[in-house]
Length: 236
Image (tube, rainbow, N blue to C red; front, side, top):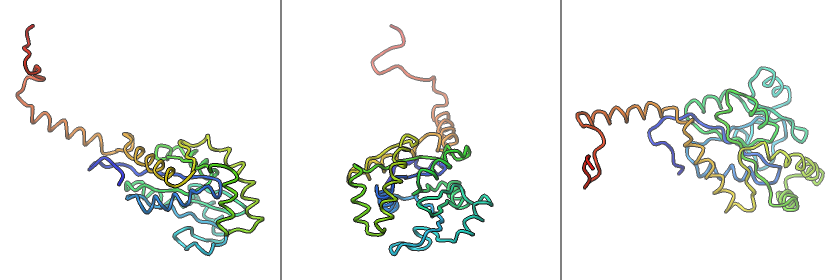
């Protein structure tokens, strides 16, 4: 369980995980969703074909290109990008609703989508960006091959794109090297815990503090203020 301001209202945050394909961000995202309360995944729309291990509405919403372009052109997407020849995007309405209700939203998106989110002034205070790096490029290649979901040609294209993607690390708030889940997952949970209790996110904190001070005035009414420490008198 992640510590938060108990009983104090706060606005939700946008928790972004990005990485080159195969570095482990999707695995980390699944672990976060299974272990953290008050966290929901932002389900992206995509025009790519569904993989055998993916479920409609859980991993992605799979749509055709005409539908995607219509959503993009009508401002229904917070961000969108073309990745490996396919389109991906984040629907706007469910994210804005969740944030307003104090719900944290997890984003499993690439650097292009993150850059677009970063340019939206109205959501900048809500944004927490984490870039996940592999321990080595050789290990990245091995992970893609072990996944056994892509053709050799697709793997080579992903590796080529990874060179560009890795170069975007400095545009993120945090960088985690995913040597193994035993070290990287606790690091990401620690980031989430700290960001949840930032003063700026606690929208109910001014009212909470005002209530504390009202209570203090009631309990200290008629007293003269701070007393001297035991054993000391006012006069020297």
